[in-house]
Length: 294
Ligand SMILES: [Zn+2]
Image 1 (cartoon, protein in one colour):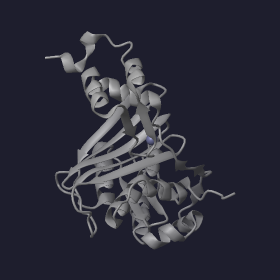
Image 2 (cartoon, helix red, strand yellow):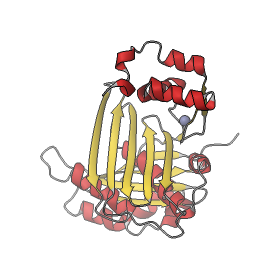
Image 3 (cartoon, helix red, strand yellow):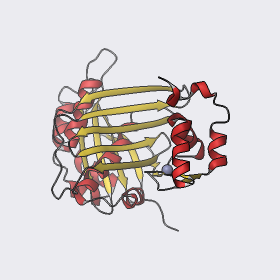
Image 4 (spheres, protein in one colour):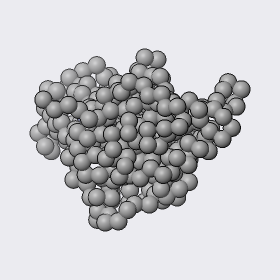
């Protein structure tokens, strides 16, 4: 039996008035990485985004999932990762043309969306901002400053076998004043800036926090285990086929004999034959068809 090394630790820095989280992903990251044959710079970007999606769930109480979605960054067509409240992660990256050979800089056209889908209240909250930096971590920090007015600092790192991240956020009182001493946030920021990607990936999480913040009163919460998980299902694929309309489905059936859908996240295959497609549309009146609308 292997013991999972994939964990999220929430923590507080009592003296500085800062909350944070540290995440480390081995198996989860290797599984996500194995799903696509990603070139080095794309894997680096994806690993850091996957780690960030786990970190971003740390300050919120919800049941559902949080997703990070970056698009319109030139050849970087799509960068996506999500994490559920119970720690199931997945992610993909899509690039147009020849795979990149050097580190990727985000384009000024890029837009970053962070969405929280709450399954209990069946509600959805989305923050959408243009990215203000070519660097992924700075772009995420910009999101929190702009969308949440929340001072945030991030270090993210990815290697072939592991990815991870550390996030700090300034905590304020109800009146808006910082919770820690006057210099607390400034101190925490400077200490975080001394953390190298290699330390983040190779030292045990507790040791990373101790090395950085030993004078700041670190209060560590119990670890939350994380794992790869995909929320795709036969029902979700059926809903997707229904949304395309009957005519579109019939056209594929006529050409290929069946409809095959492969989940981009987990590579699971769903096959719909003629009877399955008929069942998908069994309750759909003909006039509700998108393809018949003018
Ligand atoms: Zn799937």
